[in-house]
Image (cartoon, each protein chain N blue to C red):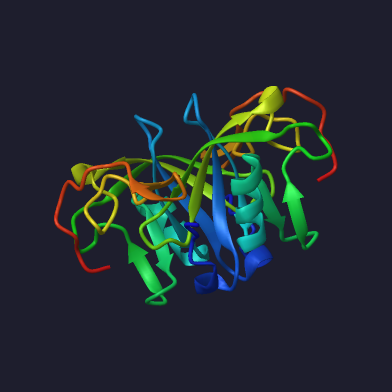
Length: 122
Length: 122
């Protein structure tokens, strides 16, 4: 089974979820070996929560599951991209389609997206 | 000046370079505060090389500079996306447009892109 080089960065690699249809970057999280294998086995994006120190199947409580359409690894095998279909159209716990809803503009953060749903707890 | 929360993850945040025109994810690297400020000041993507432990202005030696068109931060302010114009059309030191040129297919890695240039040293 193909695997990223988890040992290289202490067991975790950054995992970027990208909308498979639009190409929009939805979120960045982390995976360990367990999360990687769970993702491969289920076809649902599963991360390692660095705040809770626990396996985190995205959407387990919110229903905002990410169905994995394509799983890419980079040249150094220490970062992965998940091309996903985002159930509910909302990846961010703050209620936005993407966690990347702010950009630098005129020396400050500017919101560039509309909130689609009420914020949830992490 | 807006800044990500560098302290949260020990001084470094993952930085994802995305082609501003096509939406393709080109590479994942890391930024510290110095790299962030250098990027803002110059408009050229600058990372912190975790292998060399040094500031790394992308393209400084190869010429494959990334002109930053948009700089996004996520909800937790501990990951950034750089929407860039990639000079030379090659982001990966192995000579591919994107570092993500392999995907999981039939239980192994499968190359999904053509090499455009000869590989270089990191």
